[in-house]
Length: 194
Image (cartoon, rainbow, N blue to C red):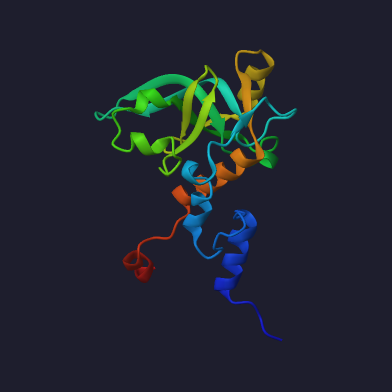
């Protein structure tokens, strides 16, 4: 009885985890991201009113975040935050991982600014118009954790509110962008040294 090769198993897993639209090559991981290019399909609706239960991709507001200055000093700020945890982990893990949501206009100084809204920059998930009616993005490069019990208490106190959940297409885009940012292969030289 012939077994399945590791390569075939990985491609099978990739295709199950990140569905590719019909007509896209299943052996081209970047095709997973290209299926969402605005030039190919137009603008997609990524957010909706909150689902009945909190879930991966929910946007909560306000969330306290911390960043670091070039001198190593903490910089505190509040922003909406998107939940990165898997939905099944939200009721059983100690911490909730969130990434800040930023207004696209605040990122004009970035060299990739014009490509962010096309969803072709791995660091950002473009959401479009939501929250305040402005165009928003999720900064996938700045994840942070907060204690789950404190988050639940703040939601119950209504000092943090659930603003949006992801649509089905928004969720696929999130997991695709996350995989492309954090799970792509190393360069051949590094892989050869492993």
